[in-house]
Length: 390
Image 1 (tube, rainbow, N blue to C red):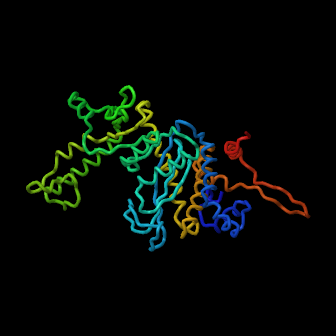
Image 2 (image 1 turned 90 degrees about the vertical axis):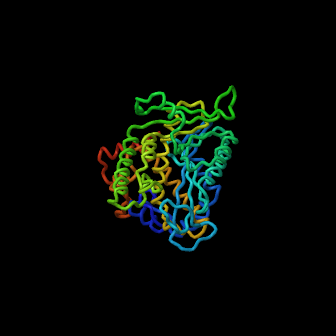
Image 3 (image 1 turned 45 degrees about the vertical axis):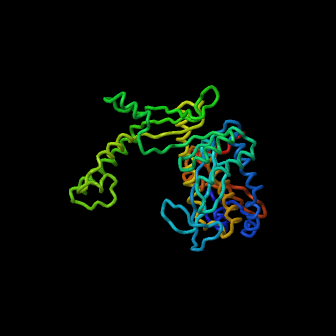
């Protein structure tokens, strides 16, 4: 409850609950229980409760993503290690993996060494989740950076499926062929091309994986705007009006520098096109693309936990403490997700609305009188949605 209202330290959590009229365990009791929260058995109970709520069963679609957490220390150890950082930071870090259902509801969380590649974090979590619930038919949805060729093979060998976004530098063959066949036509919004990989066919000649490419007019608009801006800078750089710096459209190998129009045209042809690869050949293109789009759900969950995991909230110098903290955070994420789902409000707005109202006790002449702040009709309806009678 305290982490949902206002993430903070162990001591802060006691004060946070007191501010809203909720009696909490003492600081010493909280510290004493943390080792229990760090155990695999305790976290499995949280995972199982989340899985039951999400209705996990055969054919389940799960989303996977990772984030990194930094610590206010210069000393690395066997767990806190400098690793790949999108922010180019050099401090020791750990990698946290989160597994959720198709709606972003958290199912499992895990911590890994800071220098472990993202591709190596997924399979251990998937296998543990699979073993915990005896589920053989799972489709993993993740960004292309989560999958190595080894990951894809291991997932398929385990009888599971995957859906990933693909990266490509050149125009895919099926789209290039379409352009040759339709030289005077432009792409249409939401146009889809299908490319089946039949190397190693399945039963009855079915492909063992399919890639769908879809064109988005809005994505193309934003990309083309950026390309035009870069080309304008490239032309100024070639004319000697500004420094070259790092403009990819300036061909430095050409005599006297030139704008690389071949690269410009190639990038314009690719603008707005995104690929989606899957081993689920039984799904329609829209189903595959829609499943990948749900990754935004898990990113939203991570945005909550990223601010929630600044290393300050719980004594963090040991692996046990971090595991305990992640268990608490995962439980808070699950409850927070449920509150948002039932109320239709963001967690921040919900907390801000309900903090004004509380129940309390008065001692009058030796008698205990229960009282409460009067609730407006809209708040009463909100509470009923959060806590239905059933």
